[in-house]
Length: 325
Image (tube, rainbow, N blue to C red; front, side, top):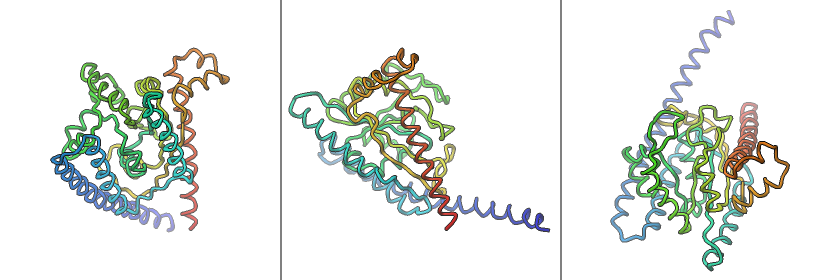
């Protein structure tokens, strides 16, 4: 009899859970899209004002940050929290970058940008990073985006207004990274101008959404070469649980769940110094033969994987305490 009752009750609970999830998605989706539409409209209006380009782009970043932040606030069933050290780490890296900027302003050295690397498991990664970063950091950041996203309604206005950089892929096939070299050379010049003028960069070094979030994919070399070229200071913004609240194939997120994130320094003294330290350490023969950008990619991935595993353990502990309560 008990087994029969289980067979009757369990499907009904599963059905109710699915209905609740769909309801949460619908509510979040309506709020998110409405806020994005308002933000895009405000960007269009602000474009008519006599604003310097970087100021206008900064305003647009602040607008979309507010839009996405309000959507998250209205969806408390999506619980996002940082580890205890993240706030202090942002303060520390901003202080270090202020010193770098001061030396550049005095003509003692060129601008050395900050590059923020993130793991990529969901579209929610972008929303989380934008709302979780300090506005003072976000103001100077731009990122790479698939050129196809610049054709989407609302999102295209936001991307163009902020000044993000399109990447022109030759194919939309997953796992294929062949790009239109001619178009991307033009974009690369814009990226260099942005970095030379004191701008910063944030990107997902894996290059695409990861099918297996628990294991970071190999990092693409383009970003590593750029980091070495500019001797960028590197930090990692890593998160866990994003794929639960916004699954990879879902058109909209909003499912109930917990997200945990942290920011950790990777190469606070620059990518070149980081590689030099690696060269002086006890490397394997294979690592010793690697080019600098390959070595950099491998060891940044290792550090970010460690950061992810730590966050995953924290999240599991938090979920365990919730079940006991």
